[in-house]
View: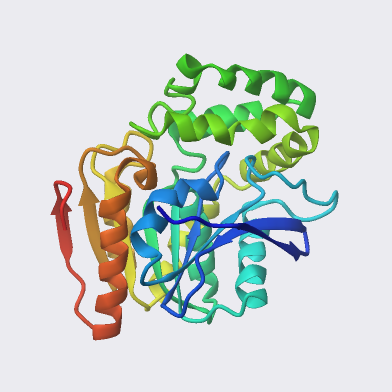
Length: 299
């Protein structure tokens, strides 16, 4: 297991925590989804840290511990801008940018914008096209986000209980094995009023842009750098067909499907996801043509 110290950096919106394995290897930056933090990637970091410099920020998406300032843009585009700030401030070059769940939506926005610091991307079972917010889980959050922050907090108190967290409207269709992790993710939003305020601002901003990822998908063919689309074949929130469509949109993409997992591949099948990422970087360096793989858990 990799033992990391959480670091902090002051960005335009406020203090953002991040984990950084350090080292001189190729850089991998990993982005989580709504109501999650950097611990989503713990198993993946264990697999990759020996050979790569892995950076995993905790973005202001509801499980962060430092509240943002009162005025920043906390829309998805605004948070993508914070990722760009982080890459610039840490001077990260030729980055493999990885996103799961709503983190994959952020990766699509950054790929669309063509950041020169991004060398390749990984979209891992994520929101795409018209699945935004994503099915029952995302739509439940979107409805809750219409509540005033105080009532939103009362609604979220139900997440203290495992049977509620395991419902399809919560994390039940997102992970098969990660309930202990999801319980930890709930603590900031349950106990910090300012975090609830930030989460409501983000959810309301998402609701105002229902076509954001539809519009973004139309621009993805301009991203000609290497890409990996890796999907959970049993995903009930992010349709596997969307993974195949994304791979078809991206000019230089490999598609991998992994069995025995729901959306949160980093929790359910961390080793398999890490192997796919490792292979992407190796093949990008070697300039190997893209292909399609259907996996039963091995690569």
